[in-house]
Length: 173
Ligand code: 5GP
Image (cartoon, rainbow, N blue to C red; front, top):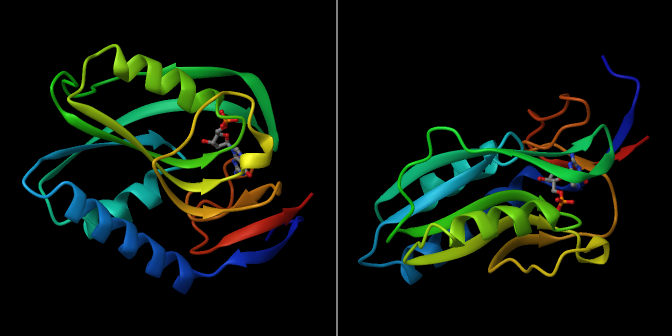
């Protein structure tokens, strides 16, 4: 079906276990509060939907579209569109991000959201590649830390392919 080869880096079972753990942690830390979970499209859509189902406190879901990659390369500039976002002011928001690479996307997103005066703001990233960081930004919750590989699956794409893989794979380009 595809020309590229991939090797599995994080299995479906490991992902399932970790996302459940994150949901449990968030449910306990936000007990008595309501969360506004902001999913960054498109990459975080599968992570955010699994995470939302593991969260046991009331949880609204919002979407923001961020694009900084073309193929397997970061373009260095972040294109963000904020359509149909619920009110942020006074809310406990959690940004659900697929992967932090240079950190430029999250830096821009967090500045935007902080300016809207949420009651609190946290970042929950499914994957983190700390060795690639350019912007000064850290996630509050991380699914897995990985080395500098280009990965696909569980929402992450290469030219819009592979998002539907239930595991994380390293793509041999
Ligand atoms: P950053 O702004 O942190 O450099 O980039 C974040 C975005 O780049 C992620 O949300 C994701 O869409 C994309 N990205 C970064 N690394 C990878 C990767 O290894 N695989 C895929 N598929 N996308 C990546």
